Image (tube, rainbow, N blue to C red; front, side, top):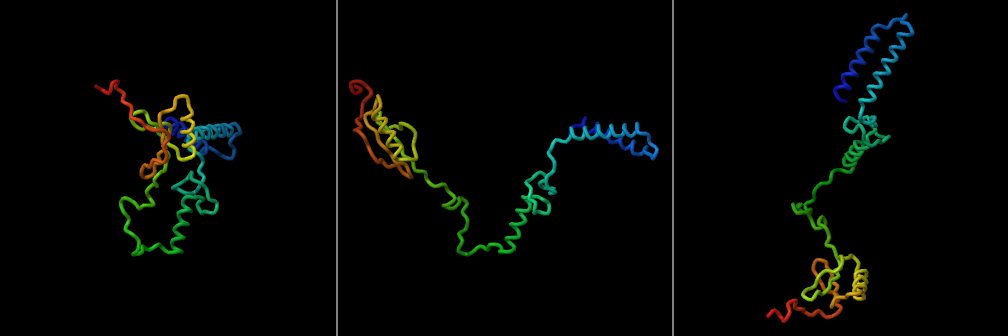
Length: 188
């Protein structure tokens, strides 16, 4: 709610308060219609100034949180926390055993990601092996890709399939890689 909305709403509510003090049993209908119009104006100002949605729970911490009908305050988040606390009371807190390892600041092996295995298609460019195409997760798909490259319009002198896991292992080589000097006459 900005300052202009706040002052307009305050004026409208003060005017309604003055109407309330002036009401008697013999107030004419025209005056009651005027009170009704002022009330409607105040409600419209209030609707314009409210920016957030309606409160869905009775929880002061999560008023617009998810609803759990079985919770006393209708708040699913707080009820989940209460249920977890009741479970630990019922089952007892887990006591550290002497056989448990001291946690390492670098984590344990299961926390670290597993090495990824990939199959790399490579071609011989005359001087060195270079990647041709994207590394793949499937060996058969990589072999089919290399077979298509060998049948293509401009095949390389040699191709190879490299298995990358934690290390590199050359699985298969097609053709014979021959070193080609790029300088004419052997760089004399």
